[in-house]
Amino acid sequence: MTLTDTSPAPATVSAPAEQTWTPRLWGILAVLCGVLFLDALDVSMVGVALPSIGTELGLSTTSLQWIVNGYVLGYGGLLLLGGRTADLLGRRRVFLVALAVFAVASLVGGLVDSGPLLIATRFIKGLAAAFTAPTAMSILTTTFHEGPARNRALSVFSVFGASGYSSGLILGGLLTGFGWRWTFLTPVPLAVLALVAGWLLIPKDRSAAEGGHDIIGAVTLTSGMLLAVYTVVSAPDRGWLDPLTLGSVALAAALLIGFVVTENRVRHPLIRLGILRIGSIVRANLSIIALFGSYLSFQFMMTLYLQDVLHWSPLKMAMALLPAGLLVAFGSPFVGRLIDRYGTPRLIISSMASLSLGYVWFIATAGSTPNYAFTILPTMLLLGGGFAFGFSSIMAQATHGIDDSEQGLASGLVQTSGQVGAALVLALVTALVAGVGTAGDGGGFTEFHPGVNLVTGVAVVGLALNLIPLFSRRTPKHARVPA
Image (cartoon, rainbow, N blue to C red; front, side, top):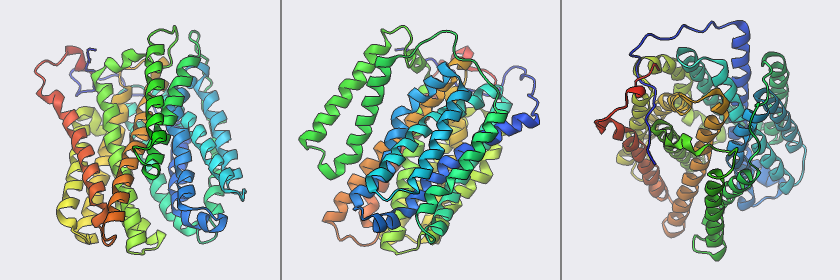
């Protein structure tokens, strides 16, 4: 399979005319950013509230993890189906319906008194987010013209994602003091407000004139992805060599192989596999795995260390990790202009280099008891810079040159890579940390060192993959397109 490079590069021809940013255009962007903010807010708030939920509902640690993993299973497993559905049925319709389901699931989750029902609402919210996330990205990339306008919009978009996650950490610490249910109920009025604004502002679009639903492809892909994520999440407790784990791996592999075979034969495939012949898109999807997988796994380890080992309060822990989110929030608005000037490949390389340097610095200086000012704070600043440079650049590269009819596919593909990749890396990190924790002394940061080594390796591999094209002597002429 030949990989064709079409990554956005510095402009060598005259740039297209600047798109006029009307009040309605700003309103549409505000709705899309609000939904992204809401998704990030919800995830971080619930994470802070887990101990209180377990105490009130009598849930074990194993049961509590499914409040998080249920969301991941629904979200990561159906993202591609969500993006393709938006392309076929109309982006506005799918976006509004999924947002309504998200609001209802949030309300029910804040009212139930049963652990299994709470986990079910989290899974349903994950399903809803699997449709709102790629659809929002698809609406953005089809509303804002490719070039400066889209790069600027993506920069603003990423700011709200970072702000939502950071705000969720702080709000989660505050709201949990009044009761964990508020962490579920707070997103409800915000979702309703976004729903009304989206109904009024987002223009109607038509369903695809041609195309169809690839039912076999949807079933095999969704089942394979769900089973793969479930296997990785549950394997640390069950054992990697357990017959059920091995059987799940084999069945997931068979389903995914069946999906590839199906996509090469059906008339209207869920994924046009030809999109994976574009080198820049393949690198964007691998880069988002390195970005999300390493960043979220490292933050997970720091959360456990600061709360369980140092016994910091949730609010104090959130403030300690906040510098990274603030750097993303304040730095991302400038990334669009940097993409226009330097192109996405250089920005992604800078992102991967900043991430790798942050993890290497942590390993070199942490020891058994990392100092916050000397080790943790510089690391979080480097990671925040890497995320600020990387997220918008990767999203721009992943959707560059793609026809409007497949923007949902491209958006869903890169977001699926990020979510599923993060789940896989986090599961491996958790297994490493748990193994050392049972065999070691259980004190200080020592038990987390293998996990930090793994996320460092993931970031370094991401950097190497993006450096490879620089050493290629042959660069296709059509790769030199306006950013």
